[in-house]
Length: 311
Length: 249
Ligand SMILES: Cc1cc2nc3c(=O)[nH]c(=O)nc-3n(C[C@H](O)[C@H](O)[C@H](O)COP(=O)(O)OP(=O)(O)OC[C@H]3O[C@@H](n4cnc5c(N)ncnc54)[C@H](O)[C@@H]3O)c2cc1C
Ligand SMILES: Nc1ncnc2c1ncn2[C@@H]1O[C@H](COP(=O)(O)O)[C@@H](O)[C@H]1O
Image: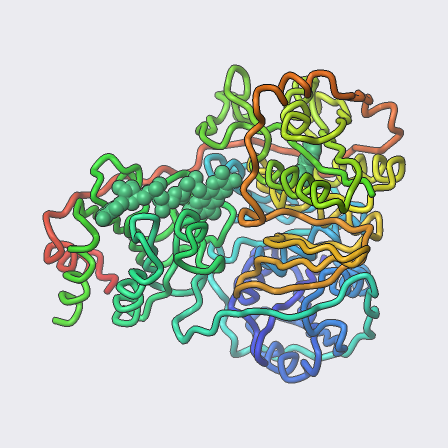
């Protein structure tokens, strides 16, 4: 039995999500092959050989893979799928885009967002916004899976000595064309891998007020997140959204400010180690999951918190 | 062109899911059901495309039990022209749903299929991508903006680091994200009119589509519950606890 992982990378480095997928593969217990696809990605392929637990690295270097187009990546994965018994992806926007295509092209079910490996064919995954955990068993010859990265501790990116092989491109689909991206450029840690996250909700009242959270985040080396309501209101961009249909985070510390705690929000943060809630409504459901609750007006509490962090 | 929209009947998003005592699944008897919220957004987008003069007909398709007719009627009340129910009492996997939708696509030849990005019951986020893969139509998932220019469609997508835009050629599959639009409410006269709109019912068995699945649910359990902690009196106490008790800052 062997596992193939579609690696994700950006700016010449593997994304942290991939290190967690390798950890999930190691829990399944097979030989692990990492597929690195991209344009001029030999350097990433080289770095990938050092990952703990990786036996082989396949590199597909072609302009067709530059923008992670799902049509092209799925064709590539299927072209190398061969005898692998498991094919894993990160449950990121990119991974979710590709995994179901690979499953469908191989005519097997997809298994989304696993949080635990019970055995090589049995996995646990959240359903209903994490209000239930389903144990699912696959009888398919190939298990096609996305992995919830916060549920698996990243493997070390040193110590390994995998062999590199190059593989042929599977070509480009002409029905789809990448036009451009408006990507956030932030020097703050990335939301899903930050050890502290400070999130704001509708209670923040405006985008400008999020600068109060930026200030705290800077002092704590934290990432800034948000509820759907704050994103819908235009306070912050979409990539800030934490929740069932946004990003899932599980930092050491999650500070929810002006967020009520709807189940859809809790789905994205309730596995955080320590949760702090600052809300003026003592009935807010967020307090039911908070380790430390502060019932206060955020416009008083947040500046005070910022000051207290200086001392 | 025609637009096909997928509408799934799911537990209403305001209702907390309860695990059945025998761990076989979620309690769905006598609870409020509704159209999957992302599918309301998909219907709305299809209607807007039609209202802008870029489509002639919007067809709402649901795969599910007889009661899913209600979900289709909701889509018809919003403004869809006709409905198709592919009836089954089995809980089908996204792959089976995608194959059934493909069956309808072959029959109806839509220029566009609009689905939700995710059903909020199974949280799979798979069906649109699978339909795209098995039909060969290009996909634009997690759409927050759709701009038509003949058979060329520019789609802005919500991705992990922001937004990206791609151009796809119709016929194509689009899946709706939260910020694509704000779906309209069905008005009472339209709810009445919707009762007269055509709704075709097809049995899964009559489609000839193989809906078997290699995946089975062994059991469904409650998640671990978090215990509520303490309420602190002020910011100073909070910072003290975080530093000296939880040791996280
Ligand atoms: C299909 C679907 C998917 C969804 N996905 C997500 C998701 O991924 N993520 C997500 O977050 N939500 C999601 N939602 C939305 C979710 O249901 C809630 O509507 C949303 O989380 C509410 O955001 P909020 O807590 O910021 O706003 P509200 O519920 O309005 O809460 C604002 C809170 O701020 C407090 N407040 C106000 N002013 C102050 C002040 N001055 N000081 C202190 N406290 C103050 C209030 O007491 C209140 O508790 C989804 C919903 C649907 C239907
Ligand atoms: N049973 C169904 N009937 C109609 N549409 C469905 C069904 N299941 C899934 N879909 C569509 O596929 C989308 C994604 O579902 P899923 O892949 O299950 O998360 C939904 O938002 C619907 O638009």
